[in-house]
Length: 255
Ligand code: MF3
Ligand code: CO
Image (cartoon, rainbow, N blue to C red; front, side):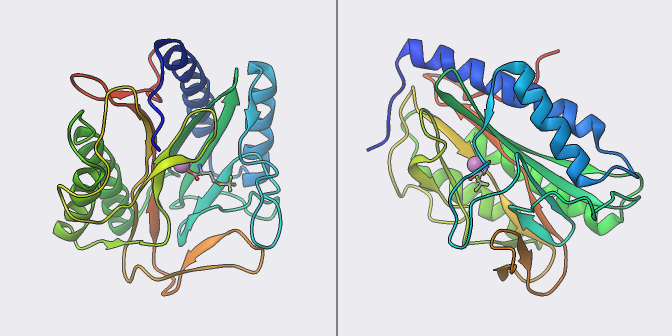
């Protein structure tokens, strides 16, 4: 069952997503060479406290242990669910994704941004750009009457056209009172397949691509997902609202 949000719920989704986007924006600006990912996470935790929001990730149950930090920070060959650490100091050429999911006034907002530190390699820049483009292309298919497979297929095609690997193990998702609701939104699939999209659905769309082979594994820490071949991985995400016309990106920062 895919929840259709009421107008009142949509107002609250807007608010939760605005908080998530503003905090992610500040965290992205804070990420610089010399800063540890732990400091970045601490900064995010303080911003959430100030905003009256809580992390949807902290304490999230996993197979081995609960997620121990406030945001997921994944660097270079890490795809998703990276655990912030004092030992990981950002340096020139690193590419990271900061995945921030918050609860605010009973609703979840979820977004992930790619941050480049200084000068990144052409390979890293290309993979990041293709992933960001795929997100916007996927979002453009989130139209009332389309089906989930239309989003999935468009994202996959953009990866294939650009020789990027498509990770199959992790997917986007509906979002609302819970961080994860129906439907699942894979980054691959057949057009005109899957559940039909309706105005009032709120979805987290999140392409996950690799530079090389798309095979990934979960590290011994129980969370960090890395590429098997050690090549780069990339992930970005927005929460969007399906409307009667164009989709609305709820996690865009309006300045
Ligand atoms: N933003 C992530 C997602 O889209 C959150 C899961 S990470 C966890 O699913 F830490 F909460 F597990
Ligand atoms: Co998500």
